[in-house]
Image (cartoon, rainbow, N blue to C red; front, side, top):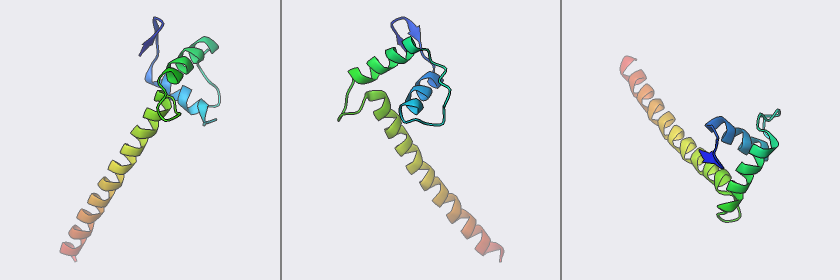
Length: 87
């Protein structure tokens, strides 16, 4: 993503979001100017009181967890069926 002619990587956005929640990324690698650019971008796209970057990360994580839960159940079901045929 580019903001004010500055390139931000996925890591930059993840670090920004993690630091918003006092996450495990204790040592931010973003300088103050970069942090302010991401904060302004995030705040400019408010959805239900949440900045867009934070809101999207939450939605993405929610979808991934649902998909992984379904995948886990499918794998477990196939393993159970395989186990029954080998007994």
